[in-house]
Image 1 (cartoon, rainbow, N blue to C red):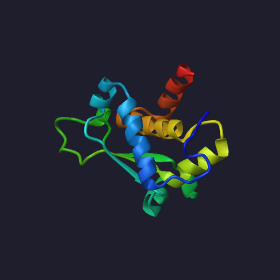
Image 2: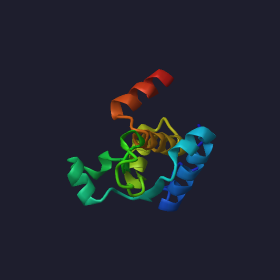
Image 3: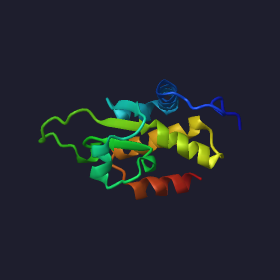
Image 4: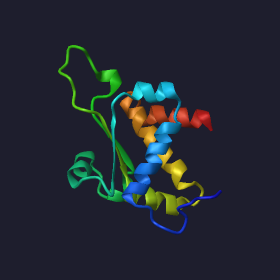
Length: 135
């Protein structure tokens, strides 16, 4: 498998470009259903986020969805703020280096789709079940 980033650490902009390409490669209907989600790439999750999630090692969190998922939205509730999908560069790079069996592009795509799944209201077990069925 050929990986253009093999041997060097991609920047935040490189990861953002990979995420953009991964999103663009998704089926149009899926992209349209995603709506106006804000995508962001940071090196790590904020300390407050890690504390809230009970995560001690920042390398354990490769991505995060923040917002009111589509399944829990109601016309009777106030308009929620924008939904956000965060990708965390350093943990993604760490997993990529440790695994060695996946391209960085594929890993970024996987994390992105996983977090979009949370936007749709899917739980981690739901997403894992779908991934297992697809393999």
